[in-house]
Structures are given as structure tokens and as C-alpha cells.
Image (cartoon, rainbow, N blue to C red; front, side, top):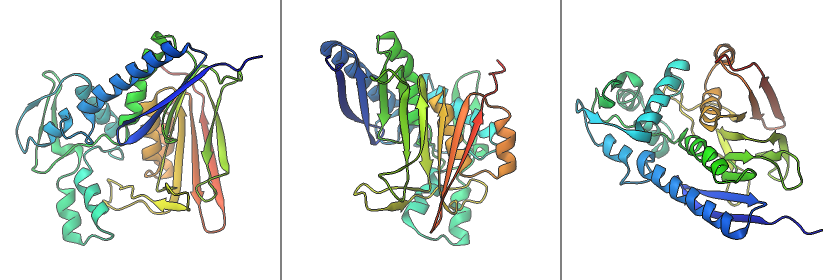
Length: 311
């Protein structure tokens, strides 16, 4: 019995390797689908990603205070999604934190003046949206938008129907191991098993999601170093305090929408438990894995929300 043909290839997008796996397709068909996915990703990156200095979002961020900027297409859509997420999370999700985040990348500590000055440039209250005319203006100098927290999820949500339309009913498209879209079935005929690595012991998994037609999105205050030698810390900034989130924690979310999974994963690192409960009541068909790393233990908490979508 011959093994099913499996096509795989990789390209760079949104600052990461994007890996595409397409089983059970003719080689020429798989290559055409791969090239179309790549082209769609590149077009989207040229619109919404800060990684591209020629992108629409880069131009928007240069506008300065009080200048109305017309915004259209996918950039307007992701801005309005980010605005909805900001309201839903009562400010915990905020794509305007770049001035503060970039400062924390440069320094280990900030004095009160540095923190206050950076926070004056952050917050959705510094942004005015004209919904009717699809335009935006900043109310302060130095305000900048950065969709890094959800742009890969948003990209996979755009790619998902395209794959199905092109006949790739079984597929994996992933940004390394952080954001993974799994369609259909594994070549063995089962759902795709997507393992979440133990950040302290990368050869071990703390959990395995069974996925078909959904995405798993992972983020955290720690991640596995490229050289495989232990964990490295990442500064996740709380909009409420302007300070990095404490502790060594990761959150992985399985959801139908990759954009929603990205939103939940990011705010779950920031929100207190009471607020998580409030937001959970607005969700359906979501599985959330929280992992906390201490010196002598790995603690996991899994939350499964199975309510039907009220719509």
C-alpha cells in the first residue's frame, strides 16, 4: 500500500516562517495552491503589517495628530475588529501600545516620567474612528498601531475559505508552532494532533489538541529559544498598568476563528479571573489551555466552552 502524497513548503510572512502542508493532492495542484496562499499572505502583509515599511499601516502611523486618513479594505476591517476587541475586553486588548512596548524592548526598567510619557501615546481613547466614511485620526502625536497580536490569526482566517475553495480540504498552515490552522484530517484519517510543548522540556508536550477545521493560537511570557537551550522571556504589557505581566505563563486557544483565538490568548495573560469569567460567558466552541511554569512544577488549567453560538 503506497503512502499518500504529502506536499510541504515554507515562505516568510509577518516576520515568521509560514509552513504549508497539503496531503492527498497532485503535486502540480498543491504547488499552485501554495503559490496562491503565498501571494495572498504577501498582499495582506503589505497592508496590515509593521514588518513592511511600504505597508498601508506604516503610512497611517506616520500621519501625526489630527490628520484624517482614509482607510479601506482589509486595513479598515482589522482596525474595526481591534476596536471591538478593545471594548469587549474593557481595554485589555489594545493595538495602540507600540510606543510603550518598544520602550520596554529597549529597557529593563522605566522611571515614572518615561512610563507616563509613553502611556500618553497609547490607548483607544487617542484614536477617533469615522465609521460612516471609513477614516481615522489620532488625537495625540506619536500614536501608532501594531496588529502583531492578531495579524497572523487574521491572515489564517482569510486563507481558510480560500483553501477549501481550491480543493485543499485536508491541510496545515502554520506560523511555526505559534499559530496553526488545521483543516480536514491527518493522513492517518484522524483529526490533526497539535501538541503544546513544555517550555522547560521541549521534547515533551503539556497538552495535545485534536483539531479539524479550527486554529490553535499560542502566546506567553516565555517561549522556547531557537537554539533549544531552555526558555526565553517575552514582555507582555498590561494596558492597565503599562508594566510587563509577571510570571512564566503561556496560553493556547483552540477556536473556529483564528482571530478570536489570538484575542483570547493575549488577554488571558492579562485579565484577572473575574474578568475572564465575564468574557467566557460571551464565547462558544472555545478550548483554552493555561500553563504556569514555576521552579519545580508545571501547572495546567484547561477551560472548555461548548455553548452554542447565540447568533
